Image: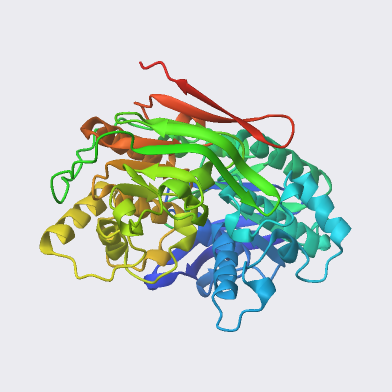
Length: 491
């Protein structure tokens, strides 16, 4: 039975662009995955599957009820949480925004079923945690748990479940668990479409595969035939790219002597739930650290203390760039030394503006551009656009780009000022193989110029060369973590 069918279809996107689907049929009993380069139209296809795009030409399918889970879903939920916490008429229970519990029970669902689903995803201990304090991976798990709880008909296979980059932000164990859950759903008859940018994340149960490029469906059909095509081989290959970095705006500012970061007996807790307990950590000059550990271990929380964005930095023994946190320094005095890319920053970059203004905001460490840039800043920002292959997109709205292209722009925003300390928290989420290689090469160049790096990724292959130390969050078997620090063997 045919579920959806497109023929010579052109679907309306922003900026007068179209998504072209020459011929695509989804039939009952098939399981589809789609892959493509950044900006190829993967997220647009997810919207098309859910009937969210207008039709300009061709044959399009009738409506099929679909549920889509994506980065945009997380961003929309984050915006709701932000508005709830910043309304002029706060009720006491709203001051902390949404909690995991309130989101799971939002539509009157039964608490026992909600807790059981969270347990299925390994996040039942987050029941009372504020939503804004979840890691990116925890947020992804929560979205899927909410969808399964609110739409039991998903399991009855009467709806199409569209997962756009479902594995982004998940640690290796969580990726295996999610894949096992998807296998279970498919075995129960669930209609499923998965969209990914890493070839190793194409689900084993996918019987059919589609390849997108330049807002067009280039190939589609049986999995084996598409994977054997020269087009897929070209996309999967990471060619050597020796990029030259645009120069810094000004000569590097000398930092105070001594450790860049120093923390003693660090403790971070939300109510009775302790996230970090008893961590002693010092980052000396010329050290480049990798942080590893499962989702929810506290890695992103730890980094937010260094960027000055976590309020519990004031209640801890924490020194940043030679100054005790809370000794009168401004947040901007901290941020001017730091370049940052993280899932939280991406979710928080809600302001409207062009791609070029987002890169320019990196000179001012702001979300949005509120200062008129100089000619030199404009020239450098445009050089970064050329380097990332986004020269033609500079004047477009930032939020009109694909997720992967947005991430590239935020990477340029972090690198544009050649920061003394670069914090990269899952920076390669959403990037295709070629762009992952490009970013790793750019970061390697910065390290060679003297920038220090703090790096987080759940994919071992994403780590750039030059890392000297590793901080590992190791489960202690009692619900907490031990902190293992080690020097890495170089070369």
